[in-house]
Length: 333
Ligand code: UFG
Image 1 (cartoon, rainbow, N blue to C red):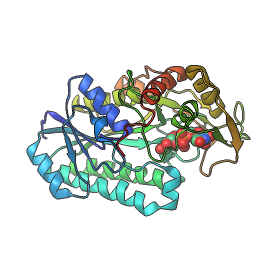
Image 2: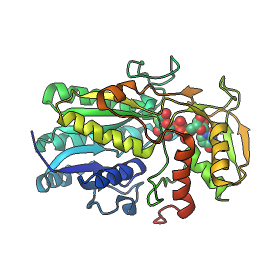
Image 3: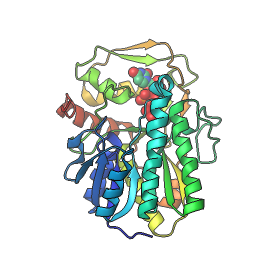
Image 4: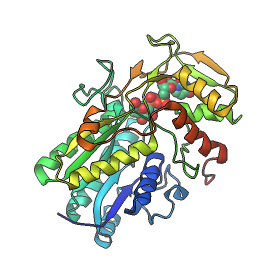
């Protein structure tokens, strides 16, 4: 097995990847970013050395693996919009599945054998119980969730056939930003609830549309488990250390274990920002389960991971520090 010194972060210019790079650097890891900048931002990678390239360019990947001593790969490069995946599934199967296979092939050629994979709660589909642990059936209801589940299966086969070790991390709703407002969430288009409500606070949108207020929940709006981005980054690093200490390849669900409704998120943004937030209930959005909450006991037990930024106010506050100091995001478009 290769004993490299560098963590290759693929998709490190995106929201979650850039925060992982940030946390890796804080802890003294040597990092390298590979990203095609189709959606990410060069500035989000900070001091990490950067290579611009496509995952389909296997020659470029082979060169990267030949020139750098790669210890493990953290893979974040994927499209992630549920709605878009229903309208244009080919884009998702090609980018999320075929491109990941190119990366895995290149890793095999280079004998790099540790892979930390960004998966999603969307692999579970409609929940059949209140909180979702790793034994919950995986039956995704959209192409996005299916692409991530396909890679999960591929990784298990790679482990059996080629001995490539993996940690699969299934995120619930990633939110917040690194403290200090230096990096944050900047998607185009933005579809996620917290950054959209913050745009209302910034005066960039008139109101927030609440997708459905007739769900069987505390106040009729959907409930989600918001997990701070640096808690996700921490889980990636713990996942790597777990594999390096001889841990078996495994999958872990990552959330706070607590749900907040859309209305509670809006109220929290109003409280944190001190701004009035106008909202309007509209029809349900296709594909939205009423409640999604993680059971993260396995990550706690096996990885020694526990969310540190558990409460929603802290999550919103860090996101507000970023968006109020960067109202145009990275401003590189
Ligand atoms: N919502 C609104 N109005 C908006 C945007 C969102 O009411 O303008 C609601 C949604 O209906 C949902 C909640 O806010 O109930 C959260 O929606 P997001 O779009 O922020 O996040 P999702 O729960 O749809 O999806 C996120 C990730 C997916 C991942 C999923 C797993 O974006 O990639 O969490 O739980 F698969």
